[in-house]
Length: 523
Ligand SMILES: Nc1nc2c(c(=O)[nH]1)N[C@H]1C(S)=C(S)[C@@H](COP(=O)(O)O)O[C@H]1N2
Ligand SMILES: [Mo]
Image (cartoon, rainbow, N blue to C red; front, side):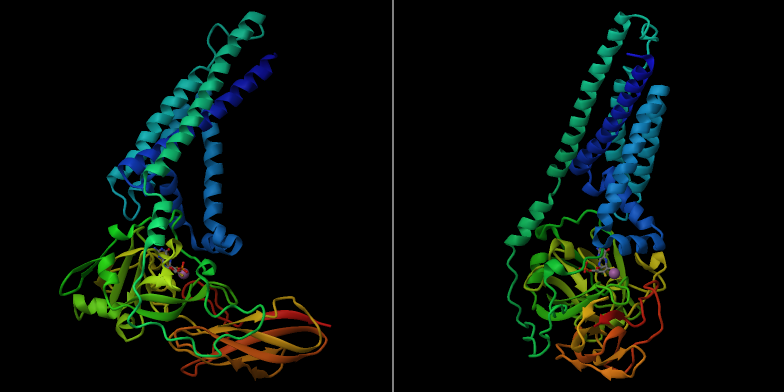
């Protein structure tokens, strides 16, 4: 073997050792977090979650636009690749100079400690998992790479066949040890995931849960709310198809028996509720359409479900809000916060502390065991999932997660309409074509929808039945299509008679506006 191949094999091995040591750091971090602290205190997740919080607006929008609901997966995969490269580099540096690779590990550990301890629910003890991980990783790195560093005897392994084979022995040993460390990394990581509260346990608890039949059930859907047009958005969104938007890289794992809701702040009397307390209340069932402020014109970030819950206004009245309070600050178990105008919550609309969605307990992805739903407001100011804390406060004293990122503090849903069929760039046959879609302006309702072909007159579409002012409304229009390329445009008028604006605006800072259009070819 030439000196060059020898050197490259040694380097390759050092890089592998670095990766194994990096893996052990994360694995031990995972294990200690689950056993002694909190799963969210593990270095990998803490850094990922902090990254999500610090991501600038343009990058976040880009990620949501490009990767949709896979944005979190892409982030985690990206982090894994970066860590892989850095760990390999750490191994090589350790080979180059004793302690240099360990220094890389310590610096990365410092970043993770800073991330973990500054998480919304983090404390100083959240530094422990990373610290333990770094100690284990540094020990592994020193041990493995220390054996690869040339000793005086085999400084030049080509000198004689004897020293070449002598040099190979430690390498084989190091390879075995590296595999062992990698195995240990996997074991500790998997162990950590198992020892903590697993998602499977939460899903089991959810499956075993029986929700009470509400004394005040949702009225049956009036006839004619759902059009029979193929390709239409269904009026009720099945839970598995309901859009999901949140900052949680790892789903919060809340067992119903451990869940508590604290109501405090500017109140006459603090209240704490268990999940059973909530189930024992007179629950109501209401159909409400949720919309995300990040929805682009024509986008899919809206969904309609029957929510089972307790009216927030009644709940807050029990606590007795002080006259000066004007914000309901809700906090999730994962630290997310939303600031909801108190007058909106108290004005008689069906703002709910929800525990059920479409006849089932809330899916874990949608806030199990409890969340807020407020008709008429974008989710980021109102729809806190995995909610555990309600504080009555004031807009001039408190801010919330997205308002800290520059989004509007108060955000009523803007009137919107969407063409579902025909789809963009559809090839159609001339003659009768059904154009159909949905329109929404929650809590104001929809009173009219109009369609325009190219630069022609706006034509009234036919409205499907209305379930309530808090849900979206379907519409359809019959078009006598003539050959050629055409642009179809839609606009809605809300229940107060206000026409949807044609002013184009991006989602930031208080919701997109403008009119949805599709281009089709008729032949
Ligand atoms: N805990 C928590 N709740 C949250 C969020 C979040 O990031 N964390 N995002 C909010 C936003 S921006 C929206 S639009 C809705 C979406 O609810 P869904 O995922 O059930 O559709 O949840 C809201 N509640
Ligand atoms: Mo949102």
